[in-house]
Amino acid sequence: MINKPHLIHFNKIGSPALGYITIAEEQENVPFEIKRVYWTYYTPQDVVRGGHAHKCLQQMIFAVSGTITFNTEDLQGNKQTFVLDHPSKGLYLPNLIWRDIHFTHSAVLLCLASENYDEKDYFRDFEEFKNYHHG
Ligand code: TYD
Image (cartoon, rainbow, N blue to C red):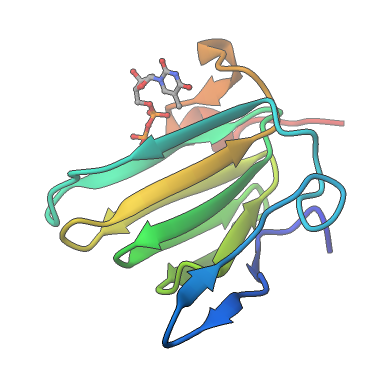
């Protein structure tokens, strides 16, 4: 289960009157050591980001604002769509998952990542990704 992309529903603490807090914590609900955090913003609605897979990197991703849609594909050709439409929803992405990402206006993506940035960890060519044999 852990090595497949899946949505996680994080607890939200609060009330409509006070607002909410959601917590992502290593070992509690994030299954890797968090080495890096980044966020993306101001992505126009007609732009598709992503277009890559990672050799080793694991990620936990949130839409802290707006709605963000992930279309994923694994090495076996399994395709899935995940819609992050609430700040308490997290998408766990293991390594070796190709993703295209669509954003609504003013969506903000927050990513917790298991490794420091390394361009060598990226597949940016889909055919190269699909031809990768690991083991
Ligand atoms: P990329 O991972 O391709 O973003 P997206 O999937 O959202 O399109 O990264 C975009 C650019 O930012 C690319 O030139 C690499 C750079 N970058 C860093 O330098 N450090 C980082 O931690 C990340 C995530 C990206």
